[in-house]
Structure formats: C-alpha cells, structure tokens
Image (cartoon, rainbow, N blue to C red):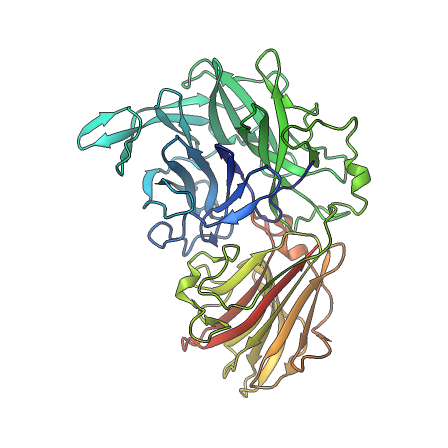
Length: 545
C-alpha cells in the first residue's frame, strides 16, 4: 500500500507526469529558493527529490516578494520531446489586485539545465500547459478574482511566421496567439483555481481546485467535447474533498492532477494537510497525497475506493483495495502517521555543493553560502535580519513529521548587538524563533532566544554569557504531539542546558500565519551593521520520526 502523504511537509499543489516508467512531481515553493521542488519515482510510493528547474538568478528574482508570494502552483508537462514548466511569480497578494506574472521554461533533460523564462501573461495565477493529441498546445489559467478559466493557443514561432506543428528539436520559440476564451466559470463552490485539461477518449476533461485552500478545499471535474468548452460539471461533484468530522482524516484535500500508469490504471495527486492532534494547526503546511481513481460507464471520474473523501492508505499499481479501510486503526496518535522508526539526516559539509533539499528565502544561497572558505564547514555571510523580504542568510530544511529535532554547531564572534548567528525555527519573515549567539551593548558574547509573532519580536530568555571563541551547539526539539518546541545549548560537548521555557508551535502554522508554506529549521546569521561578519557551521542534523 501507499501511505499518504507521499511528499511530507510543505510540498503543495502537486503537478504530475509519467515518462515511460518514470513519474515526476513538481510542487510550489512560494518565497523559498530555488523555485519549484521536483521529485522522481518509479512506483508512485517512494519519491526522491531531484534538482529544481528554477535555480539561476536569471530565471527567477523573488527579492521583495511577500510572505507566501513567489512561485505558485507550477504545472509540469511533457510532449515526447521537451519537458515544460509553467508557473506564477506572485509579487503582491493583498487588496483588490494581485500582481501575478506567469512564465514558462523548458528542457530536454529534466535533470539538466532549464531554459530562460518566457513571459506569458499576468491575468491570473495557476497556469498549466495542455498538449493536445494533434500537437497543438494551449495555455490554461484562472482569472484573478476567481472569475473563471481561460484557454489560449500557444504557438511555435519561426521568425514572423506562426505554425501549429509540433516543436522542433532546435531551441524553439513560442508566443500566445489568437483569442483568449473563458471556458468555465466554476461549479458554484467558489474560488475556482488550479486548472488542468486532459484529452481522454472523446472528451476534454477539466480539473480545478475549488473551495479555497483550507478545510473546505476540493477537486472539481468538468468535461466538454472541445477544448474551447462549454465544460459541464460532473453530476456528483466534487470528486475529492476531506472528511471534516474524522480527526484522523487528511484535511484540506484539493488541487489535483491526473496520471496514468503503463498498465492503464489512473491516479490523482492532490494537496492535503495533517493538523496536529486536537488542534487545527498545521506545522507541516500543505503536503502532497495520491488517490487511486477510475472511470465509470458514463465517462466520469471517481475514487476507486468510492465516496469522495481522501484515503490515507491507497493501493499501489496492480494492488486492490482491502475489504475495509483501516486507516483509523493504523493511526492511534492523531495525525502522526506510522513511521518506520526515526530517520537522521546529518550534513558535515564536506562536499562542493549543498544537497538539493536545502532552501533559502527568496534569493539563491550562492551569494552568501560558502563551502570552500573553510573545508568541512558551511560559512554563511551575514546580511539583513530575518524579517527582511530581500537578502537573508538562512539555509533551511522543511519540517516533515510532527515530531522532529534539529541540531547544529556554530562558530561566531560578534562585536555588536546587530550581529547574530545560530538556529532558526520559522514559518516566514514575520513568525519565527531564533536561538542565537550575539553581543550585548558592552560587546560581550551572549546567547538569547527571540520570538517573532506577526513581526512583534520579544526576548524569551535572559541573556546567557557564553565564550567569545569556540563552537556552541544549539538544538530545537518538538514535543511528541508537535504542539511545543524546546530550545537547548551546550559549549562543553556534554550536558544540554535549556534555553528559556517551552514555546508554542502555533506561530509556525498555516492557520496562525494565514500562509501557504510550512515550518522550517535552519542555520542563520545576520549582520545589520553592513560589515558582513560570517558564521561557520560545523554540521546540521535533523531527526524525524
């Protein structure tokens, strides 16, 4: 069986394709760099992260993007020759007007370099690219204000001539062409977004997300005889949503995409969340799950297990559903799904590049992270403070399980209170905890715990004097239920000392921050004097389970 979610911790808005025996998923990253996470699988069950497509500054500039702005809802596709990725860079998302710029990149090697971005439009977000069976291509996106779904041709260009033939092997060019037509207004549920079109049999099928990306989220299905509509909503819509009465059920289920297996079975990947037990807090953010689906005699899609509620356990290709769903019996501790023991990820920073799972806010970490200056250490150059929307020196890992522990060892010699380095536990620029070494007004080295709740920063412990030189180890550890986090330190390599009291994790949740990402642990330094003092990190270790 496949256990959901298949991509744990802040991996929302999945877009899936199959190329032969290989499956690939792209997910949103919002303000986190590099843009778009990519994952590979051969069985739909086990997934490995691979290099991101948007990892050059020339492809993406998110400096100044708001919290939970940036890269929204990418669509990954393949036409037999090229891989394509279309995505939105959201520059503003408050008030009446959203500024949402849509782009496309492509490659003939999904593990290699992707092209420079082609600007498409800014009329709405969640664009997707539909490749029809005759070689024609269409851009599909919603309209800002949730005013429906648009379709427009995307043509290959050769000089001044437009042609609708399949793309050539030489580096092609494209442009949007012809009428931009609204083909669907939504089912009436509201917040119609995330559209994908498929040509299956004699029908064109349209899948959209509706209900808002919260506890009323769902997947809506419609179909038409033409890509230009009109699309008719499925009679038993929505196809997928969440059982809000069952505390063990996956929540916020919606934003789906379809894929078939080589043997003709069908699956739907979708967004989901796992609130903490007894709470409506999601420290893990929005994740990605998968459901087995099938087509009925009338040509409508439904869950193979029946009903419309997402299942935690789903058959692998070739498997059948058990006689009954025993998800509740397999999960005795709230939404903490059964794990195969604890898993430790530890980096000693002995390579030439950081692993693909590391991330930084808004801009590439290549500008402030250095693995060569001091072999065996990660050196981070201090820049602006964590509540900046521009240049922040933070290397982070997303939280993937309800319980987790992060430990690092840092060497840092500050002279001013405006310089600090250490361990971060954060959601975004306004909501975080920092256990950092800094200096007091007399220039003496101290350790302090800072909390930022909605941008209001408070000291959560009395400063502790620590040696000016030498390493200091820092640790953050969550309670078993994930509702609290404790911070610890040591500089003698022996006993851990507590830093302040236990803190609530509520400030790093979607619900508190009204955001779309998830909690992260990370190595952090700032130098607000402009002197660019650096910190050296000996290792970073995260334990999950």
